[in-house]
Image 1 (tube, rainbow, N blue to C red):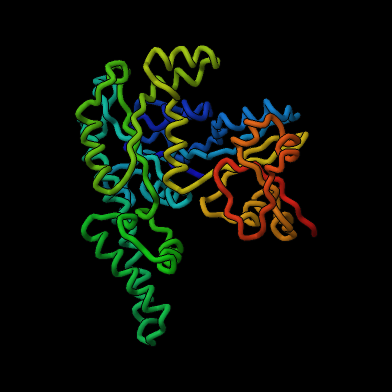
Image 2 (cartoon, helix red, strand yellow):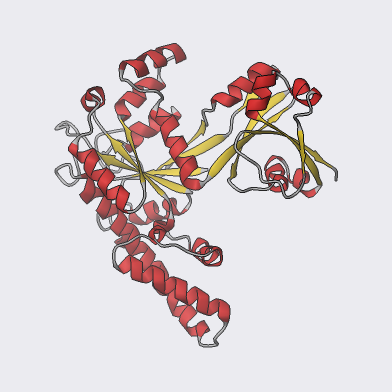
Length: 364
């Protein structure tokens, strides 16, 4: 999974990126510090993986990962090439979801490109730039499809209908993701690679004082009201505190989290929101040498889940031997689960569930 971190210059994107990836991206108080997207691969925190490792004592424990891209700050006019516009827009096309960082704090020492803090203005400017870029893409495609639709070809007519619906929404300043599509229509939308079809999580970056107070400031309230209208989620993070947490040992991290009244770091909350947004789940494989976590889409069947490990597993799939995570923990070992007859044998139509511990049988 790839998540692109976007937002206006100087809203805390790179600070957040540094905190959650420890990748050391350059961070400075001036616009366009980030030009090419910095990339960081992060282990997905999952307590279940650690628990399985405690039970099985493997030589190696491998978490699943998520990729974060810190994309250059956007300014008004990006769709017309202002700032780093075209580069910014092309980088967004590469990601699965967008974490839109919004400045929700006042600080006279950190300049704002538009002179004052206004999170809704910032959100709307970026959303409009993405809409303008998508309209340009649609116009080009519509011109071709309208000609093809004259033949009354059913597929062309369906595509024409979808494109016209999206165009109408965009002209009303609504993103493509605000529309609902049938599975057939969704395939058409997917091949368009529209920027506004990307699912979005709004990340409200607040100050340390606001974090300590535990109260939502007016900026965050406005962002939540805005996000609610398009069914988007809002995660509140103090990027500076996340940067501090990233430098600490595990015990010190727990102490600092407790001091701020937090149950988990912002990274954990952001990843959970990303998984929920994209409909992702985790399954586990257990061998003597390695316990490993894997990410798949909800609704994936056993052979396709096996294919995540190796294409041969999918090609020669015979069956999946499955146990629930809770069953493994309750019984203390795979051997005990087998002896009690709690290991299930599942075929090609089995839909993998979150937390499944699976051994795939295959032959090629």
